[in-house]
Image (cartoon, rainbow, N blue to C red; front, side, top):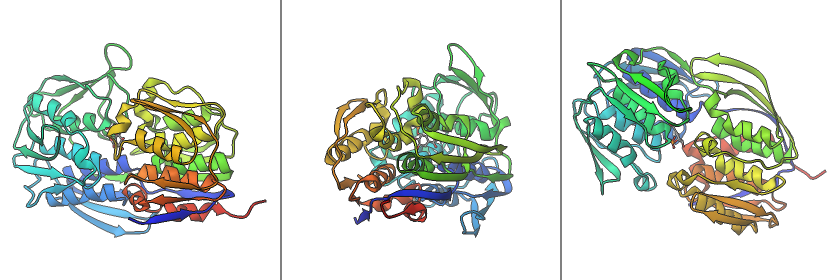
Length: 437
Ligand code: S3P
């Protein structure tokens, strides 16, 4: 475990482009691996999490070749296996730190004709997997968990029967696992009722319609073999969750940040909308529709932020952005309150506890709740000493806070940033303007 020293940043100025969005990258790999024949993926994320998905899919028989490593021109060629073309892995599949890898692949493997086993690192072995096995097993699959809840999970050959199922967790990973299984429904369709709003990349990229049903925002998705992915070319827009840390830094420290080719699809911009409600000066200067969702360029200027109410239904859409938003909230006028966010305790680390501990260590008055926290007193220390708790988003959020403190700060166990953004510290350096005016 090493410690990173972050110096005070007077202001930032410049332009950034991010590796492909992590959620979209996982899906681009899974869909092209499932499809028959050759596909290409541009700007795939080469974060640790996405590499975990690539490694697992390789062990299942898909072929990947990284043609060019450079960020903006990176292209991956994929040799997909076609319907039911995956082969039994020779070893246990390792999802590393990635919940998306473990949960989406569990949905896919639950309907194959061979046995498989998935494990993950220490953090992932503490995250609940019954949210996947309970609905899938109710449809007919045979997934067995460790202590009824955790990885490693053992998956026996299985089939699901066409029926209707209602999601009981606001989770895009659970929804996607069911969709992946549903793509293998041969005589009929799996009808998924989703009472929540969560990121929708799986449906969008597979062209599955979300039809309103019952009380808003509930939607129904009819999933069958007809939606099985075909080979093609995917261009992954820049990762908005990675960009969020820099957007927050630009709003607080100034002066100006341009982010190009950023994912801007409606289910992923909730945190940007909240920052705008906080009077953040964020402008979309170009927008287009790509084959993996909306994307465009934004410009961010220093702003005097004012805290705003965050609604319960917004929480699932900003769940990954809460660490970054809490730094914006700390520098905004008024208290910053997060409630209805118990899910944060089930992420790479218990993010409520991690945020509260780090803020307290920096002299901030913060109250912890079972489902959130309130930041109210803001007497910041001159220098911070922060723990990442092995969580990439905690490391990046508190690196941003360290950069805003008069004497900077230290981040313990900072290397985990590579889980989503291996370029984080390089990017921070590239836009830093030093020297007090
Ligand atoms: C993800 C969904 C979210 C998010 C995770 C990525 C995805 O989790 O926190 O980082 O790619 O589907 P849940 O929606 O399952 O909570």
